[in-house]
Image: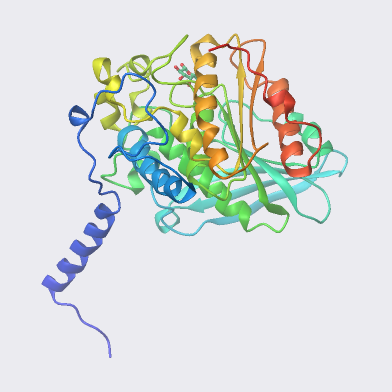
Length: 383
Ligand code: GTR
């Protein structure tokens, strides 16, 4: 028999749906003005109530607390997947004298498949599963011309334009925001969501080694990659490059370059974050209940590499060493070693050949036990 709903019944169902949606992001966290002032780096291993993380079980709880904190106070809650990811291969052709294959895939995802973007895949020819490197920086450049270097090492490269998910501007009435009305998340969370949907698609491909999914991005793309990697356990290696403020650069210890005040200035990038984050401007910075080491620590026990340039003053490379040294203690909680690295090169703000080489060498080290971790443990700054 067909079920009929009375009007009040329908209203009730709608209300229930709404509450479920809203409840997901309900927290007991206080407003910024009620947070305690913390002068130094907030301790990764101390809960908000002052109790200490003493073992791995406690760390898992603290990890959940940190996930809430960074979303509630900084980026906004990363939206749910909203639905299944569907990919249509638009074209596929031999590439690099048929040693590789190039594919263009139209992805539909999100609520009712309403989000659309294109994924470009370059993969070794032939059968088998290969590790994959995902970058969302296609809006800036394509790595297609450099693919031969990746092919020689046996990696797939998958690139997309993160601004197809959310354009890089302050407008909250475009891109993904239209699909999640009323949710206060910034553009970095939107881009992180995009990385996750790419993982959804690639996971279902028979040529991808699901245990060897790497994500990377440069600068604002690196901030997004770090955020995605921190929250998505399917990602085996996270490699933010030159990600600076809002990425791996410390918020409290800005040795050089961009501060919280700079990045949230109304003429700059406040829209990369949620609205609450703006309350930490000026004297309230010391109320931020975590620093960026928290985001890095969420990657543990999976692999993590931070790539930086010493001449990239705006990205606070020294502050990235500070957060790194703090965060790697999380891997120790798992008894894991050799899964974290940091790399510094000479030069300026870019993800250049040297950075990509560091990524491949570190991936070979972690996945294939080739080479050594030593080049990824060199620290240029003394603290
Ligand atoms: C700068 C911004 C940085 C960084 C950079 C980039 O203008 O202040 O946080 O993200 O852009 O993305 O290249």
